[in-house]
Image (tube, rainbow, N blue to C red):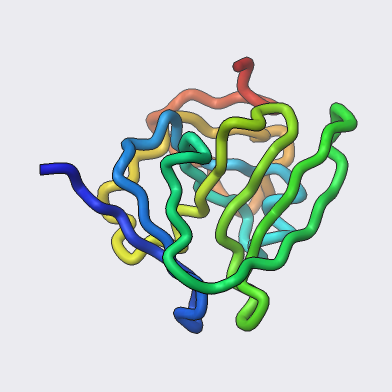
Length: 138
């Protein structure tokens, strides 16, 4: 039987699900993720966009330019502001789900730390997995 993973925002106004295993799970220490989450890093899972099903609710979006000049759009609950998804022009077929928005994130296993060049000195980078100073090569 396929596992159904569910998640959503703090106020439960947005709910989603997916069954595909993440293609990649990373801890991102970039400054944008720090500011968007209010945390020293964000753990994100890359999925094919077609794998994610929005069950209900409406997301807001904010788009910025990446260091490479391409659009990065972060999506969040319009009511409570919880960060949920990221879409990057560089990889248009993928959606990045914030692991903290899962109902149960105990199974999540990051395989890489990225943007460690921006990691805060007071927060150790996760041990036991490879580090990448910026974005991983895709």
